[in-house]
Image (tube, rainbow, N blue to C red):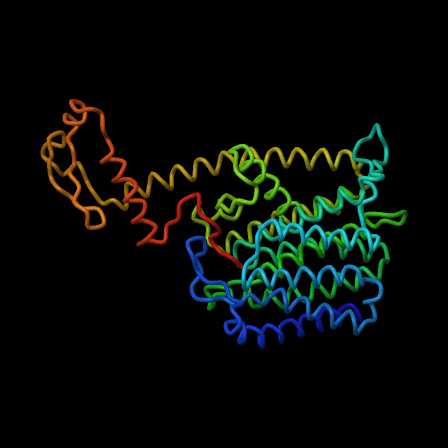
Length: 425
């Protein structure tokens, strides 16, 4: 009964704060404005993170659990403040990473919550103790996970739902192990996420989200999942194996690692924004936002279920880890090939459909000298004979393609594969 009240209270507080804050957000510039990397309409308030954090703090204070979580709460508050600043004014990537690392360091070094061992993922070695590398590796992994959840915030409802799926797995494990203090935090956070999702998911009569998480919210959720996973996977009375936490965060982890590998192979910075995340692939394949959200949620739930099955049946950690690596390799190979195919098809369709020039209507296509226009600029179609007898200069054709693609983006909202997120939630 107490657990249910904890979640309901967090949900109610979060929903109330959202209703109030979203009305004042435009006045302080805390809104997400559509641009070339975002397809939503109108300015959307970025108050989801503030509301979830407010509900979390009040519920923990009411339950008397703040003293047990003070380092996490301080670090989470710092990230929320930084996220709000970034949402409203902007911040350099280097500074964001530095503050994220500092927040995780606070939880690890001051709060004593860090990854001391990786479990028995290597059967010959036994329990893989990290020793002096424990805190540095925790900071590295923490920054990675925070940004993994931030990058999953690409379509309405996705980041919040992926967090809720991970919290479900962690909550089941904490309940079975009798970790009441951790369970209170999970329930409070879960209730807040549900309260936010009420405003963030698409409904039959609502075509887009009412509010977004913002960087403040995605940072908060990433840090929270990290903190809870470490609390439950370390120590002598651990509720889950360290490898189980990987399965609970399968979708954002594999997507982020795959993205880093793809950008690195192309010689790009891992921080370069693009449209090559897994949710972008779904959208490029003409799945709706809602279908993309549901599909990835089901995949994430399958990962949590597999992690719990492995834990309940005491499947060796080394086998669970090896299976996760295999899934990761298969995912990377699949997403790389699928993205190339879909990107090629998209460019091909754009050139054929939107140029709107049917060369077959000419009596003699090889000697057609008609003048046509692209964006009001007259272009001369050079015949095949002219191109073969000339100096090989085909810049006119290249200009046609460039102008056509520009016209696509301007008039039809079609974005090239080098753009940013289709949705910024």
